[in-house]
Image 1 (cartoon, each protein chain N blue to C red):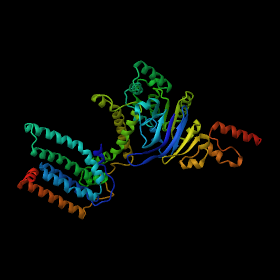
Image 2: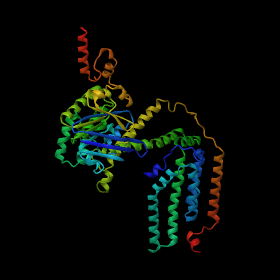
Image 3: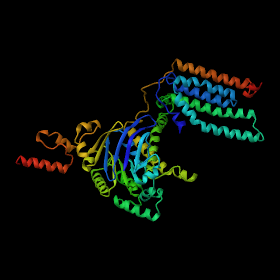
Image 4: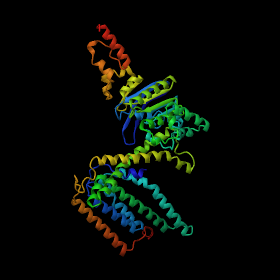
Length: 274
Length: 262
């Protein structure tokens, strides 16, 4: 469980990035943190594995104060996948890249071997085991970065902008993967601008603006509330926009899912006798 | 790292910022030469003090103090190595003259840092590029130089992100013996170098698509012109330099210790 209590944070440049954030993320929850650039999303999640320490307030990860333990120790439980895979790839082969963290955490070599095989398999990278990560495409590099974090099977997974630069197929795979993590009772936190992706995943949504959380709740409720979304510079997903634009049909307004939308529209059409 | 933050330019409007960078550079070179000319404490102390009004006039005292603080470690190193050798040469004796010369040598370094810090704190990279260009340095070199200067903060930010990413994978930079600590930096340096190369290639493409080097004769939006203040600084610089050379050649410089004890 991640417990954030009235956290403030400023960068050395003087920018106040967090201004009194309080929230609780329970084990097994799936949370999307959204908001415009510079709203403090990445700053907030960097506090969850101790990369940043709060200037005021407190963050407890499973009851442990993040200021009291090392980043390495927190990272065992909280995996953080950075936005740009190029900020971490450095090894000669994909295999070595995945082994890096496992070695840092002191796993035995036979365990490392097994974990690598498992992680490569999970993300469809087995054929690239001996390839240089620099030779792979952008999407593949992103998957290698993800595999290198998943390899030690952290309890909580933070994904910073996972959909940027991914084609539709990759996004769909990512969505399925996240859903799979949920069935394994993992906590997944994503930071994103991609409102359509969030609408498809249907997580708990947190909106941030100027260092504060301005809304927190179910995706269906938040993503179909244009006034609140506007404050975070987000446009509702297209499905929600259609339903918001058709008030005269007396349809429900909190629809963000394509399949649900289809059912509702069919029913409405049947009623009209078509 | 604070030495570098003390060299970073921040836009302020002051009489010193408005000076022609070429003149400022001549001034810095003159101070440099004078600092090398003397190893005695009194003239170096004087050289240190005459620059303080410039700092106050340019209103960069905070940044300047930071860069001075950054120079403290290196200054301490210079002091102790010099002191150690003097101490050994004097047959394990601490002589007041030796202490004074050592302090003088350290102050020489501080004066150099001081003058360069004033120059970089009050001169924008663009201005500097313009100055180089108008002194007929080929534009390719000027561009490479100003771009390098401008990309330093970008690279520093990137290094921070890379460090965070590797720390999130359990890398502990301060762990292990000396050799291990150096090796700890490999996962930081490789992504940094790769991204710098990648960035430079992208920049080259972006420049070519904006017709970089299309004509031999480039015009500039701004042209540097000498003003009253610039001439005044030149006169002051020449005055100081001439006085310094004269004193060096014809005047005996007393030791501070002698003055204090006589």
